[in-house]
Length: 384
Image 1 (cartoon, helix red, strand yellow):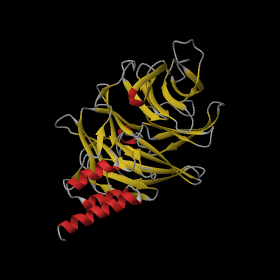
Image 2 (cartoon, helix red, strand yellow; image 1 turned 45 degrees about the vertical axis):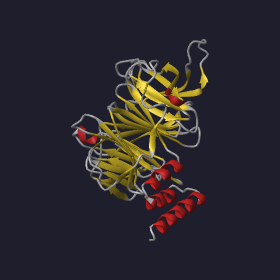
Image 3 (cartoon, helix red, strand yellow; image 1 turned 135 degrees about the vertical axis):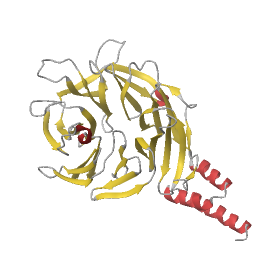
């Protein structure tokens, strides 16, 4: 790893570290982003919406106790949440899935903003018995259809598909591993892959990677690997590859099995993907701090490295990477423009790195020609 060059191609935005607004009540349990906002779910049942610059927009009570998972949809301004509500009877689980339409507000008086809840589902039923939810993912199909995957600690995935607002849904169950030891069965990560008519779901446990072909009836499962990873160290690339982080390396998977692997050592607390860069929060057990690295895998360089206090959530919005820390503060990190990056490289006479950079980031022909001209001038001045 030491042979990878380090550069500062990213910078902190909004004047560095900022506090999450005090209007965000409770402990932050989950986060999502999209459509120009960051959405935060708290342990007191509230959902808070922040706009650009992490400014507080509004909050509303989504569940009667903790909001465990949420996802802001991209095609429509819907928010899907999972949380606990009042238990109607001892036989019925209190765990609910709700869909909110953020474009429609309830006429609740002027003091509060509460979006319309257009659908409520009980997640657990007699056919779908209760277990601990460990992961959650929503795929937007052609409106109004949603496909929701809920991963459990027993190796099961409950899927709900259909128009939730009209309660026209089908439910089905996928089983990854039938292991008696729950610590190895837990679904730690999920990833949808859509390729034409083919719809597939990656599922990760601590010691397996599986792929379900959902266009087959019944869905077909294949095991891609006998190693897996923990919660939060699973992401998808923009080419629909599954990426998992383990202490010894980061592994990529396609539908036919394991692809490239990158030997970055350390416990991967969070993995993400941003504009072709791999994002990695690595825990340093000795210092108790985390290191946030941005890897340009194509050019084999570290585009940004930052020591941070404990990270609790990582997301991307407004063209920035947002790190939320355990002390309820946040860092927004944005990529510098191409001109600034090239200036940095020219000052160090790193012309071949500059050429690779403009070519890999599809810079326009004029920028590429300018880099080649400067490289030519540099070689001429050295009489090379």
